Image 1 (tube, rainbow, N blue to C red):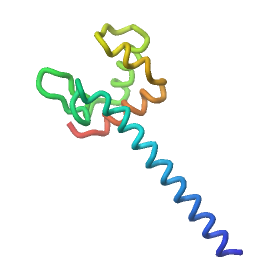
Image 2 (spheres, rainbow, N blue to C red):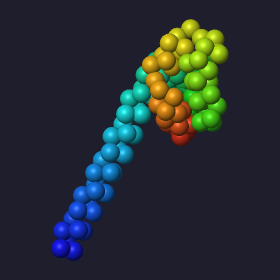
Image 3 (cartoon, helix red, strand yellow):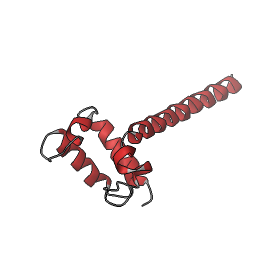
Length: 100
């Protein structure tokens, strides 16, 4: 019985780890959509805004402002509307965690 319980717990932890890994990969997929303008992992070429290493709160606020039409944009207002507020927070966290 104890051995079965240990295997069950191990299975639960493995499933949780796999789910977390899948979530990280999904965030990378969302962030990859930003690479055309903001560079790979948010490190843009000169003349374009880099996202890597910026404050998560600042990035999220800018994304929400684009989404709500409070910040002028050419395409960002359209792109940001394709994500939930939670997804935008995860994207902002991803770029904040990247090295400049």
